[in-house]
Amino acid sequence: MCIRNNLGLRGTLILMLAIITNCWALFCGMGLIMLGNGLQGTLLGVRASLEGFSTTITGLVMSGYFMGLILGCNIVPKMVRRVGHIRTFGALASLASTAILVQAVFVNPFAWCAMRIVTGFSYSGLFIVAESWLNEASDNGTRGKLLSIYMLVSLGGMAGGQMMLNLWHPSSYELFVLASLLISIALIPILLSVARAPQFDVMENISIRQLYRVSPLGVFGMLINGMCYGAIFGMGAVYGTEMGMSIQQVSIFMGALIVGGFVFQYPLGWLSDTVGRSLVIIISALAGACAAIFAIYYTDTGLIHSVLIACVGGLTMPLYSLCGVHTNDYLTPTQMVAASGTLVLVSATGATIGTPVTALAMEYLGPAGFFGSLATMLLVICLFAISRSIDRGHAKDERGKFVAMASTPLAVSLNPEVELDELEAAVTEDAEQVKESFEELIEETR
Image (cartoon, rainbow, N blue to C red; front, side, top):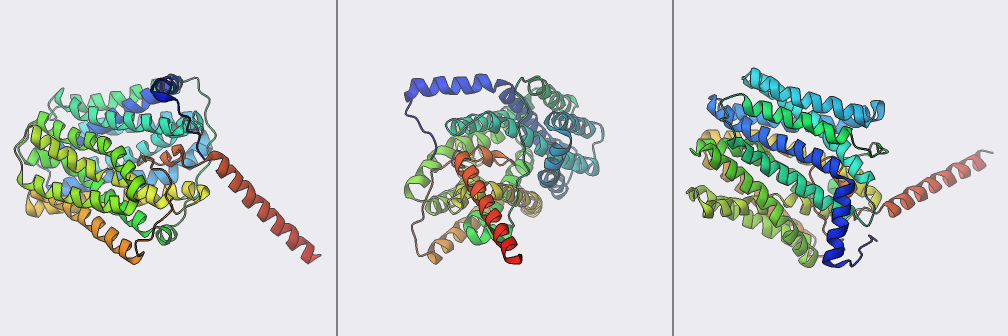
């Protein structure tokens, strides 16, 4: 089991301060990377509308990021093994920084789509390298707190990136240069860190079919929730622009979605530990769908609108963690690690589909298609979860403790439920069994 010392508030604060001090370079670098990521995504959505790109074309362009993420999950680990963490991180950060500048120079859908694929590929590698270092710096007693800080930095950076949209008008080149600079500067603290490069092993993925047999709701929910992610981050800024929002209002709109996702994460997680994953997934998806439907008709910008938007994001984004932890409830520690890559690929595939699907809905239904698509996706998750609960006869499953999950390639390795000692013991046991089988086979041949 995980080491969970009862330190009290003061002891917990001291421990978190020690973690931040030890990993300040990594957190600083990741914060800058996510600032650039948050700014770039919203900037492209707004600029595409200003340039007169059709909604469908914009959706296809924005989905390129998730295509690149899928490619990166498969290719980057091999690059890391071949040339090492530092060279890989430096090369991919430079590539991501350059891709943004290319988008500022060549303002057309083909160049932007190609560069979005490059950006997704690069960010996948940046996540892999940074999270490897974070995992190396943690142990069973600190991984949970480390993951919480990591998610706070990541989501805080994403939300902060939305606010930076107000520094210059999106029709000019300055914001593109700023996003490029943020990623370039992120190289400095990480590459100058005194922490040694971590040991890195390519995770073996299990097939989607195998994982679906273990947890149909977890895999299906991850796919549809990925579509929701694609809709939010791919078309959210486009929706705001088409609704006639000012640049400041678009940044607040996107920021509210992200902040809501972070605020609701742990209350929903605690509830899932108490009453069960499936029930919380049903409640969250149904409530999120209702909030999205209400948002179609309530368009007056202001505090109430921001709270409503935060509720939509807060009831949608935590479904990633809920579905991931629901899947882990049926897996052993070794299977959790193997399944992590598959879950990320499922989510990224959903996001790749969700962005153009939402764009098509907005093309034919107008801005209402944005929240209409979200509501439909959430209702699909809700109905599927209800059908699974009925099929299982409301069986009570064995649940581990909820742990928030980041939708990045190696974040599951920071999960404190994946016990390093158990994992090592399981791998050793498997190796011994294989050795015994070979010895028996040799004896029989003799």
